[in-house]
Image (cartoon, rainbow, N blue to C red; front, side, top):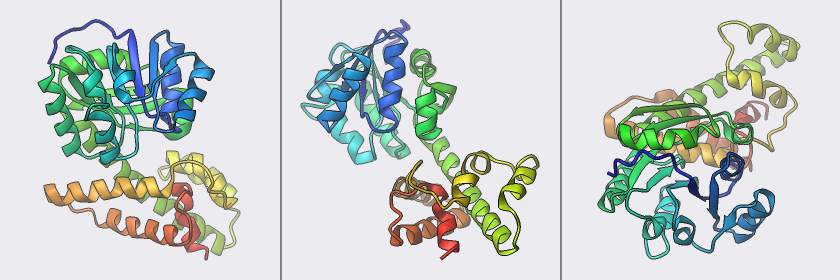
Length: 295
């Protein structure tokens, strides 16, 4: 890896979905020169109109001349599609630059990308995020990172433009593995909250009053604070989609098998999300687990 420690001035951002769009915007507002690419060109054009950065026809073109390239796409295959080949970012990046992957993906992919980047003397940090669209828009994401200390040191000043908590956990892959812990904890919390709200309704309690009280004690959580109101109103057309959560849990369960970790509750909640998908809730927020209890 290059040991260059200069703060990146030019950034390329690959993937302008509900997360990437505002994240790239924070970089432009912070004064960086930002070059963007999105598979759907119209989104890239919209971003450029909103923020003033340049949009490009391929990942390679966006990456050319960038000190740091950040990716935020859908899954392992999507990452590979924008990284490799004649039009991938690695074809446009220069020796000493830095590649950061914000996609929630497998730890194996992180190690694969680090090796491929290293062959071209390009640094790599796996840096999945948590906090959802709201966190991205407000610039308060949690970013868990894996990679060498030197590569992380170069990435950190950029990531703090949209991250409230940015931390290196360990070597390559540690960021993705930490994100797995994050999703495991969320799955159990959302199911417990769903059961609690269902129980309160069946008991004839004022659910808003119940949450007002118990959220201030040991049962309190981000999910309780930020999702109870919409759950009570049966509103789920927002937030982090069930399809995305199942993709993430599949990564968790596969890694658990590899490292011989037992995740019985996570596996069960994954099947509950399959029930929600069968109800047509593929794009509903993850808090829609309550829906299957209220049928």
